[in-house]
Amino acid sequence: MLAYLNLRRRLDHLPRDFKMGSRTTGITVVSMLIVIFAIGFVASTFPTGGNILTIIFYNVGGIVIFLGFAWWKYSKYVKGLTVEEKRIEASPASDAS
Image (cartoon, rainbow, N blue to C red; front, side, top):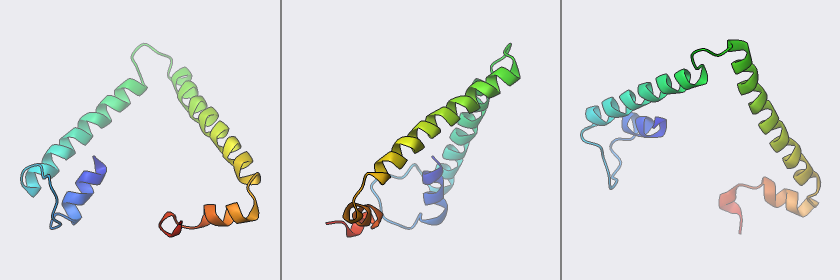
């Protein structure tokens, strides 16, 4: 939704297959959807009747464990690459052949 909002704000002149009404209508609708999503996200993150510290610990702990595991596995993957594979991996995707 943020990408669509940015597209309508800055690049509305570009031709494309689908536009949600006029520029103002598209920006208004997507802004309302972003607000609704943000309220729902905050409300579901902190449910009523729960201990706030437990909820924060659970959410932050889950993110730390998930990202830590992914970082650990990616580090092992990078260490296992040869010099040629590292060069290919570091090059931009558009230059890969």
